[in-house]
Image 1 (cartoon, rainbow, N blue to C red):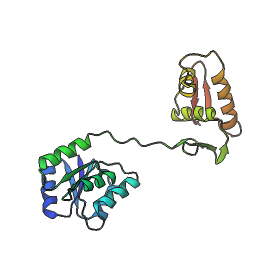
Image 2: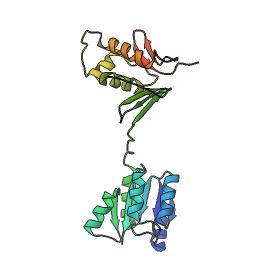
Image 3: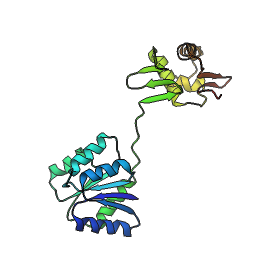
Image 4: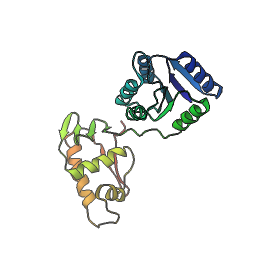
Length: 226
């Protein structure tokens, strides 16, 4: 594990750092909240151990700022502030755990290890891009070469599925399931009709074809090789 310990009490910092090192982990130690914030943005850590009362920037503000920046590194607050409301504030600020002083290092190590085992938070994708074709999933807008393309809701979903599978062949059956929620073959040309409409909007007005029919297999959205 690579751990960042931000603690202004030198004795506590040295004690914890020594324990982490003896347990086989790499630990960086800082004593200032602002310095910790900068370090977190520059280096990927497995876990952050943060004191609440820090010079430069207090621990709560630092973690709030990290979360606002999109940083999802697990955080355990290590502090002498032990009231129930204080613990609630720490968790609401974005902390994942809260341990009060005085503490047993064995407990701190166990909690840090548990945090490091949590699966990484999934980053929500809000923009898809294939070549000069862009799809804004928040604003529900499609653009190609900067030109906005008007799509019907089903066309938008069809394009989203194809773009999420860039370069892969998406079968007719897969499209029926993911776009129309059909788990049977409706025996209609609904897929072919919508593919034709989509192609007329995203390809025909432009020089390069992105939407390709793969005979007897399905469809693939990709930038063709030169």
